[in-house]
Length: 489
Ligand code: NAD
Figure (cartoon, rainbow, N blue to C red):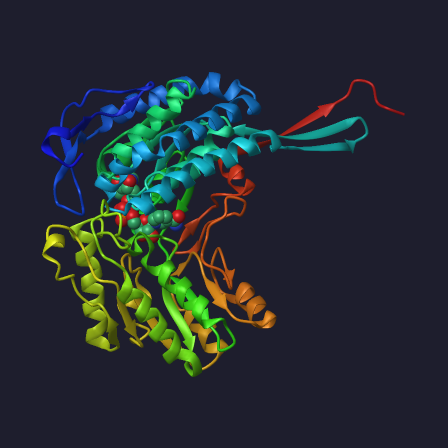
């Protein structure tokens, strides 16, 4: 896949088929090796219009089907995806950079989420009110919205899309997906696989291209009724502003800077493992990741030592290396942004206790690698505390007590995830009640469950994915009043 002979050339996916590559193109680069993976169509307004019209044309028939029917097609799609995981792994590793293990976990999770919503299809209920007035009953219908734009970033191209596809499709919407301009290939294959498994042509289309061109054309298209967006906070704000024209629905899953509080009564070894896993998984490029640790001063040295030991042991390597635990960052730009954040932070204070630079290994010189890095006690108004660090670098602060930990945890523009490690029920309950975030884990690694609603507050966004709650964001509720001709006695 990364050799010249296997270069991929693909166009947009419209009406159930990948179109021939056409017009201007984007070149896709392997973040681990710097080699060219292939080229895709750089879709402009015209290609986006064709995709949205295809989704709009498919809506009438798709939305008329029963929930169980749509759920069965989604289930077949999830099974087909699960069967193809091994086939998809090399492509995802090549375009995204992540390790084989991470690619496998991501693809399986994408299939699992589709399956979850296939199951929920038979559970969707609406409301009925008997006796609003004598002889008068009320119903609350759930109606699909129409064409949904699903815009996702490059860090988890398939799971972030299936979080949207599951509820959108089950509820009867049709979708135009836009992957990041650097990770189009797995998404195109996913659309083909779901279509082969029974999704009618037009129900899912994929436009490849840049955010300012394809993304904005999709958001502003008059037939787009909802934008389900995952990405950075500044882009989310722009998308929300653009969606105001036409009063389109918007859900925004944006950046995060999740705090983790480790108390003196916690299982320190488990907490250190969760911090390392939560920060360095996917090379630190996850919205939901441990991005700030607050540890009680009395146990801080032990915890810092344990986290540093874990970080230093991580094997940095190209994604295709079966032994690699930490792949490259996704792009040169992402690495530059993080290196700049670390430098600006250290300029203000704090101490590097692990990593801090690029690995010396010559074999990694052509990729965007960075050592797992730990910084202790930087000022709390420095970039590593106040900005989102989207890479393998973790700041840790020593705190006096629980009150200080909560105060600093909330001293951030973001509010996505959070976690607390303690043996005290009182502290756990306080963290759940007082941390401004969409999720709080107690003594648990930061695993996301399909069963629970997920979505941030503040700069982390608006609306929910996952859970049955997601269905509310892909349907309109309509009130119907029925007056019976014959009034019951
Ligand atoms: P980004 O905002 O630059 O891009 C995300 C997507 O939006 C891409 O497909 C991009 O092409 C598109 N886009 C860019 N400009 C656009 C515009 N003007 N109009 C419409 N679409 C546009 O984000 P990124 O840097 O690629 O991704 C990383 C960010 O995503 C991080 O901030 C991360 O925290 C966030 N993220 C959030 C979640 C979540 O669920 N909350 C999950 C994963 C990533």
